Length: 281
Ligand code: HEM
Image (tube, rainbow, N blue to C red; front, top):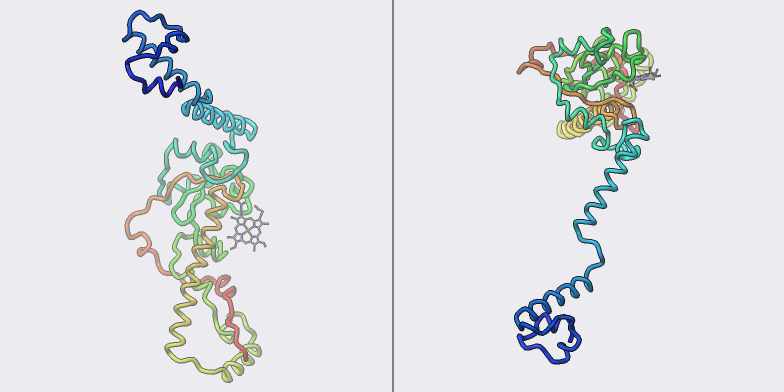
């Protein structure tokens, strides 16, 4: 009799069964119970490969922990995933998360410009604070970019006007990506401008609608470039590009801080760098 037959079997046992079974035929109820137990055991043995789901999960978890531990040790505590560099794979990001976010006002942030060797060096970009202590020769006193330390100079990160634009105010900065007509280009010599003006006279005039459309398209593209430009710096300071920088918190600012700042135009450097529209004539 197969184990499944036995499992489904009636209370009456077959005589052949009695011969082969190791259970003494004393009490029918107890015998059936024992038979059932044996059948279940047999079935379990036949279907199991020796490992339960829990065992498999335990093995996977153990291997993961071992891999993370070895990676942590062999990368001097930098990576839990053998150098694969998404933010969640970086041990220092988890340390930051556990330590909690910091929140500093602009004047508190100024204390972290590297002048005090006991403090870390921070810089902020559009409200996000990053720890750049790992590069004191760049951001510390006397460093090539010390200018960025202890402040949020998001505007200067885009315009490159380090002296004039050491502010987080990004209003109107997209203008630097808005094209100008060749005759409007800043820095042209008078004779060059004269030549461009002559060419402009020959150009087909655009309708008001066409001008409006063009402006809308150029503005949209310019705003995208602002976002992309900032994101590229965020990536560097988050550590996505391999530098050991990390995000540590945000700048605390009172409501309406931006409106209180005087609006500024484009600095000379950014104005000069504006793209020029291309025409056939
Ligand atoms: C929008 C203009 C610019 C901005 C905002 C800017 C910003 C920066 C920053 C923040 C760093 C440090 C990156 C890091 O921490 O790894 C850096 C590095 C560097 N930049 Fe610029 N930069 C600009 C333009 C330029 C230009 C025009 C030059 C070349 C003439 C230049 C040359 C360098 C060099 C050689 C380094 C690496 C050396 C160092 O870390 O001191 N940068 N730049």
